Image (cartoon, helix red, strand yellow):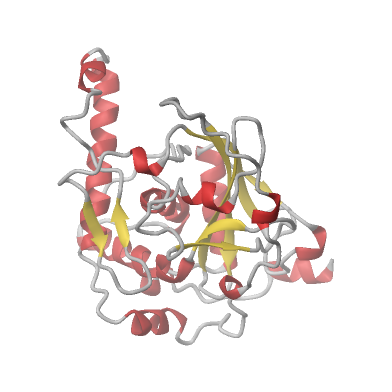
Length: 305
């Protein structure tokens, strides 16, 4: 218990504005803001034996359950509007796989919307385009130098990289029969999403675990069907969750998160405004949407560049 109480007195230097990283206290602050504005998210403790002493016991990670996924990524219509929002670097770039398609057959449905609904849709589209344009301007000439800048003089630099943990559970051995019908109807899947604090990279890290319409766990190959193919097995890999025992989950590797966030901070600052650390997870969920474009989680609060 004494170890948990030390979280209130232990001092971590904030480097949010300089490098885009978070201290454990800042992660909790951003998590509280997310839970307040997006009630579908909640704090969780996880396995008692895996509690991290640098986080409050009842706020180890964030969780949202039963997020719908109505289609597979291969169903998305790729057009000339698709854009690379972060150049390929050998380890998996960031690609906007969910662009607005003005020629979509959904146009007739849009025409029937109220003016208020249209306004909300246009605002969401503008936000998506602004995020893509902002990330596209990132200078990623040397990835190794970028990671070194994030970790330099870190208070937490001695921590092991949890991203390097190799799963020991072979999920394929328990692979259920495919639930996808042979016809054109695609059954709805659901996902549980987690956000943990990665102490090595000092950023949030997203985890997803899926089920089919019969609540059977999805196999590894099935989950990769719901990940952008530009990121599958590169940016997204199957890893052991740091707080929950059981089969591996799909996880978005956190090595580039701080770099993306740093650019957002600089862009907002150049515009004469200030980006508070409490907004971190709201923005984080928006830019990782490119990785899992068909998993329709709720990030609720709008953000404009």
